Length: 98
Image (cartoon, rainbow, N blue to C red; front, side, top):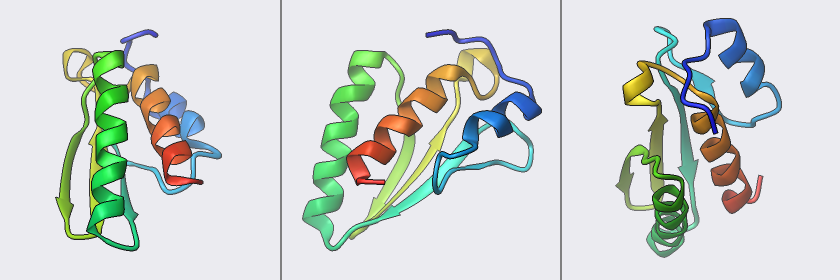
């Protein structure tokens, strides 16, 4: 998976069909908020994503408050969004069920 920064148009195109994700105003990251039925479901989701992120060597910036998980993805060493971020976002959507 490449760690080359995507331009704004390429990042926007990559988000097409990727429900819930949006490109930040500055184009440097993508983000989404996931809402679950309860804390246990939110934590299970985060655990599954953590294992995947570790295998990918690509870790999200995220926070959890009760049943809500807010995620921001970017590739720090590339200075923006890369294909790696898009791939992790796709996996997160699959884990979420959407």
